Image 1: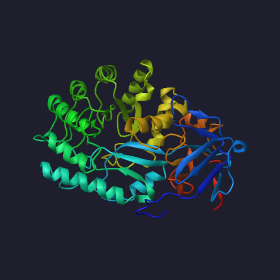
Image 2: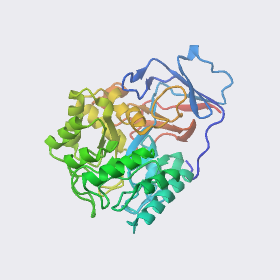
Image 3: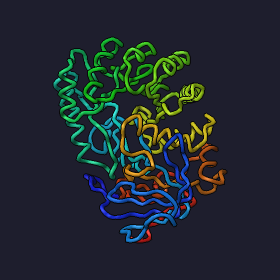
Length: 398
């Protein structure tokens, strides 16, 4: 698919029929009793059974051929820099490749890999505004990238956060990746950010790159960011007792990432389940990073948490869709009327052990991606990165 400023949405009527399994993204009701979706103007207009919906005069019809359909996946933790290039790995087209892993939305945790990243207050504000503007105008493959996440530095005052919000900034980069590493200062700046509608996240665990440092449970709890970034470490995790302390000591989002400690990820999942708070679990990759780019990172996390964490696959999908959408206040991530028509068609991989999509994921296999849609427009056909799916959707009328 083409790269670039794909900011338009489908203006016509789209009908998707013969859906074999419809995953809602809603952890309270993860599987919908429906086989058809109607989309108008790039948004979900109706969901139900084919016989009950108005499907006449559709400008586009997609036959899912029994494939499963889920909301487009959301990566809650990425570090974009410039277009579809990452200097961290000197790699091109990593965003487009991630689209082929079913991800339709990315959330920046800070553009910290930018060579020569400014640390002065004027410079960091300018860089954040530039990134926000660039990734609003330039969407590789149609990917939605919420970028422009400044990393806080000593000396920032309330007016700086007011200025950032007025310029359209809605995110803070990871607290702890800049010069502010103590809980008291972080808490004040996080409160200023929250006052002006800017959401915050924090680095959790040991140092990840030169310039970062240890952020332990005490700092995380005192800072009180909206999301506990990579609670399983990025890459080095905190001891279990501190992870539990964080889970029990706050009500914020618990972000588990691909580029973290897998054992700590499973411990966090078990703790959240014991607390009856799986709705707090969200997923990210924390890429690009020293371990590279992971185009299938969110799918891999879903399969890992389901198969090794003893979580039903339909619930694990919610971690990377509806949970994140609600935590991040996004208009996607859930299959419900009025939401953005961002979808990933997934099915069991060919020759896998699982007899169904959900069984395959619960066995730890990656599903095959057959198509990805953003704003009601087909952005990819069969994925070039996942195993081939058994059932593949087809555009039958356009």
